[in-house]
Image (cartoon, rainbow, N blue to C red; front, side, top):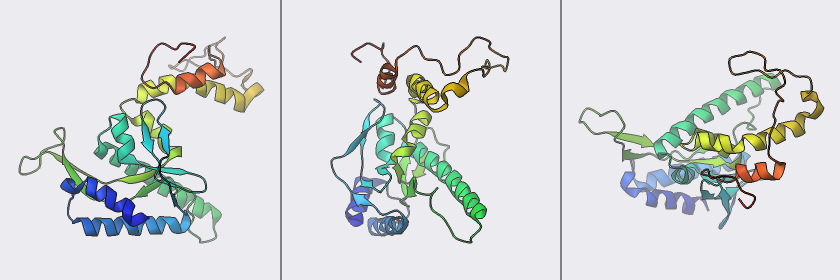
Length: 234
């Protein structure tokens, strides 16, 4: 299962291999998958796709008890995001997850290493390189970027979408749905709370998490992708 998956990725990136050949890269990715599966058992799936809030769709490769896992390179391609930027984003988020996990482990105080914060990102330890005209030139004048590939859980997709080239539009699309969600969670607790303008001054009379849309309209807007005028049939 893991060998076939890793082989497919390496074959698709054969002209971009960096440092090591295909056999070494496949072997390392399989080791990473096997290690991850010891704490997060994975099941291979085929034919399942996830809609990226109307900005594209990407295939699911594995599922666990709680999550679905996608290749970040395939998600990035749908969002118009350079794969090396997606790789950099994943490394940053993984670093936050490691820090959070360490804090959880220390608070628990039993000397065990936990994994509850570590299930959203899996670095497959591939090593690829592509020309990147926006990169700083190396000593020989070539502009390039090195990158890898990751499995990320479906729970991380909203954050990735917000950091993609479509981020601003995605946030605009989802604000009304977010408002409905917050009102469901907090309900009457929002009454009497003061809203504030962006400059920090009070905004009397402004209702927190207000939306002019119905919940159904807000959900349609959140899934519409690149903007258009919201219509009853959208």
